[in-house]
Length: 66
Image (cartoon, rainbow, N blue to C red; front, side):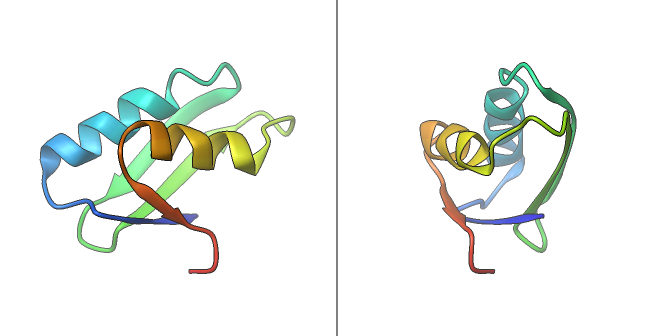
């Protein structure tokens, strides 16, 4: 689970989901707007930094310490 700062609406959820689904090893995503958390199902080969970069690319801030 990754905490994401800056999500305020359903459009935010869609932007993050769309960006994460561009990663070839990601198979499913669950974004919880109320908690600001993102859960990702992916191939074991996925690098957490790739997830963080995709979230940044969508315009949000991943919080790896949360």
